[in-house]
Each structure stands twice: as C-alpha cells, then as structure tokens.
Image (cartoon, rainbow, N blue to C red):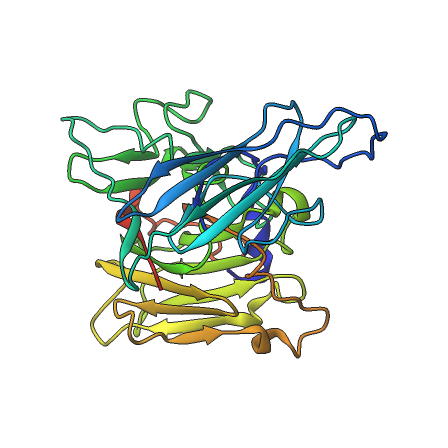
Length: 377
C-alpha cells in the first residue's frame, strides 16, 4: 500500500492456532523469579490437519498469562526467541521447540515436536475455497476469519464503517451483510451506501486464527473499479501485537484504486520500518483490453530474503524485493523473515489515496474472491 495507508490494521489480536511456519501466542514480559519459584506449565502442541500432510500448529500453556516462546530450527528456545501470537501453518520439515514464561514463575520445561511431512514443491497445503452448501448467504468460516470493525478512518481518512458478520451496530445491518459466502461459491465483500454520505464495507482478517511463513499465496478475485474504491488483499506480520506497524512488515498482493484505466493496473508493494511510502511499490499493467474488473489470480511468492508478486502466471513475477531493495533507505530494516503473517481482505471506500466516491460511483458494489490458496515453494 501507499505509505499513508499503513494504519489499516486495527486492534492486534493474540490468539493461538497456526500452520507450522512460525507463530506465537501470549504476551507480556516475564519477571525473574526466585530460585525456588514454581515453573510455568510447559506448552502443549496441538495440530489440525490442513491439506496434503500440512498441519496448523497451536501452542497453549495452562499457566494464566504465560508468554510462549518458540523456535523452528531445532534450537533451544529462550525468552529472547520468537513469541507465539497465533496458530501457524507447518508445511515443511521442522522441529517446534517451545517454552512458557510468566511473572512469578520460573521458565517451563521445553516441549518439542518434530514434523516431517516431506511435501513436494508446488503442493497445495492450505486453502479457503469459500464453499457454501446452503441455499442462502452464509458466514465466512469463523475458525479462519474475523473482522476489523468501526469507522476510525484507519489512518487514511477512509469513509466506510467496517461491519462484521451479523453486526447490528448502526449503520451495519444483519439483513444486508457486507461480507458473506454466496450461493455462487464466492466470497462477497460489499461496499454499500445505506444513506447519503454513509458507507459500509468489510475488512476480513485471519489475525489470531491462522498464519503462515513462506510459500506461494494466491487470491483469485474480481474487484470493483470506480471513483473512491480501494480493494486489497494483503498480509501483516503476526508480531504487530508486540512490535506494532510498520516494524511487523506489510506485503500488499492485490491493490488498486478508482476507475479502470488504459492500461489497467495492480500494484504490489512492501512496507516496513524506513520504507512506508510509495518507494517500494511496483505497478503491473494488464494486457491491452484486460481490466481488474474481470477475474485474475494475484499471487505472492515468499521465501527467506525474497518477496515476489505476479498476476495470473506464477512463473513470471513482475517484481521481486530482497533486503538489498531497502538497503539504501534511511533507517530501513527488512522485516519479512521475522515470523508468520496473517491475511487481510478488504474493500475500502474513500481515503487519502483514492479520494471520495462521487455521483458516478455505483452502490452497492462488491469485491468477489473465488479462493485463497497457499502452496509450498
């Protein structure tokens, strides 16, 4: 996103399920107890099947208020290790070692579990296909998706009220949901104008519920194009709960504003400490005659030290960012190898980048998403 957009993330949530890829649960510093202090309860590692032998890993401790620290490289965790914030995807051979620490307790013993899924490159390991087996609009999977809500402007002077599923807080209405699974098999994110000068929409996120680190993620989407619309599919680091934005890192996979142009475009950006403006955004121009208002696959290939973006063809990224991309920027630090990230899908209305809607802007309008899929690199 453009630098002014960065405060879109809303309140941080520290929940606890993850696909083995790196995540953490808990929060708070630990006090150094006396030598006779009772140890905190050791973390418990539980898993939920994803796809093709991948799993989502969740860490918990029975000690109230405990912070869980973990490693994935076989090393012994300490209270300087990564903090567990949420469940994460494990889709490669890794060993999870975790300990719990809490004020008034000594550190727990280390819990360890080795995963050896031996999954080939290019394998689908997680997805939300937005299936709906009912004959009515239905709720997006609550085990995966939660919502940012309200009308704070999100740091960008946006105009919409974001509404969660079944919200009756005015101007939201359960009878006119802004995010739902349609009977057509698509996720619908709807921007509406319930009254003059009042706008509603939705911002869905997996924060605290699901995250991953490294792999190829794809969003198959069709977006609205009109003055004041700003559809996006993007990621923020789980550690936003502890280091805040922009230190957590932001990766923008799908993003554009306003009406279609010729050529029409999508922008792929990264943001972090020292690079929160437009200096690390690259425009992809669609082939002649194509627009973002038709179906396209927007993808990111995320590896250690590398973030690449593509549209429709994963073999042909239109930009690749590495630590060298930020090395010449004052105060810049590469944040994308510091742990897992969560997913966000939203349709903003107005704001500093797109400007306000006008008489040509159609309401309601919607962003459609066919699926979100993650593959191994």
